[in-house]
Length: 439
Ligand code: ADP
Image 1 (cartoon, protein in one colour):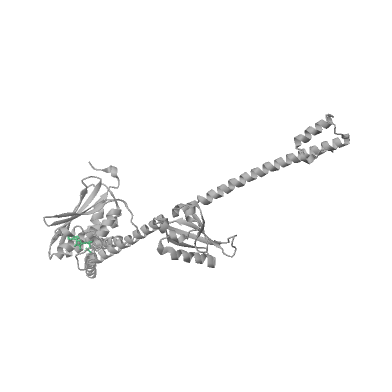
Image 2 (cartoon, rainbow, N blue to C red):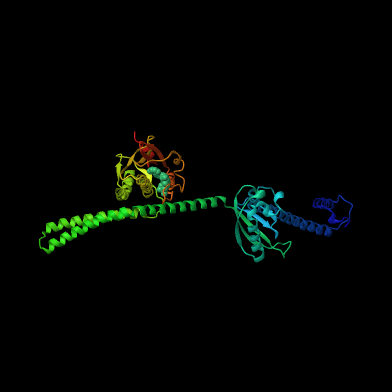
């Protein structure tokens, strides 16, 4: 062989072979050599095909790997949680884009920096504590931190961390953390806690109102009980004398049942008022709610020489309200009226409770007017502030809680002035069906 076959490309080889076969060359070659050479070329062609296939497969695999790498990089970078790696000094080794966005910087400004410079100063010790627990004891643990410093703002984050081996320094594991922005969650929790506290306070105030009503209620319960006793004694006497006709007995028992029902209704009213329930607004008749509140307070008012006068506008549309909470407001306003009258040394007074449609006709109004001494102008601005009271035993919570009850109902409680010795507080409640406005 004259030429070095390995130096020739497949095409050159094929051309050279063709020339040999057609004797266009002076190179001397036997026919055995030629067939051997042809076989060799064929084998080489097969190998080339195989190599080309493998090459294609390799290229495809590389493209797939690159796509997978890009996908995972995207997943890492744009995950809904921030990912951060910290070294044992608390410096950021790497961070994804979510973490960078939360911390308000770019990679260059973050990587290699102590994480504590992105925290509220007061929370830096908590972070180091957390890091120590993770790296020293291998704990999978979490902590809550306020961002600040270079991160600016006042967001709250939660770090969930584990220790992972660092291939560059196997003796020193690093801390891998998922960082979650929990600012909204914290705000919602705080709001829920506030609502719960307010509901507990409203309930406590209701119980304290019941305490104020206790002697009146006892007096009221006593009436059907005394009547029952009288009827029972009368019946007994007549029976002993053998002078009772079945008709008379029936009438007597009827009267006793009515008295027992009255007593039971008083207790049910108190139980409904005292019950601790979540606020539950539903369509209700304001007149019914107000009447029940007045029934609760009536004995107490009468004891103080005050006559409550109910003036209910007929055929009013329903309002959206939690009846017990609205009763609480009415009771509070009436008690305030009674106390104002009694506090001024008056032995008699009048409290008017009036319901009606508001001027704007998209709400109902209830106004409670008393004939007490009224308010000083300077007091008006303080009325709805918690703990404002002029009473020696007062808590100063009644009006402020009533105000927030109405606010939560989408209504309003306001002081409506003091004219001709009449002090008036009014509240409004939205209609259950706003379309049902009266002409
Ligand atoms: P408290 O009854 O415990 O004082 P409130 O919040 O119900 O708490 O009332 C706050 C203050 O508003 C009362 O102490 C009183 O000075 C004044 N006030 C409320 N209602 C009347 C009223 N009808 N007449 C005069 N003053 C009133």
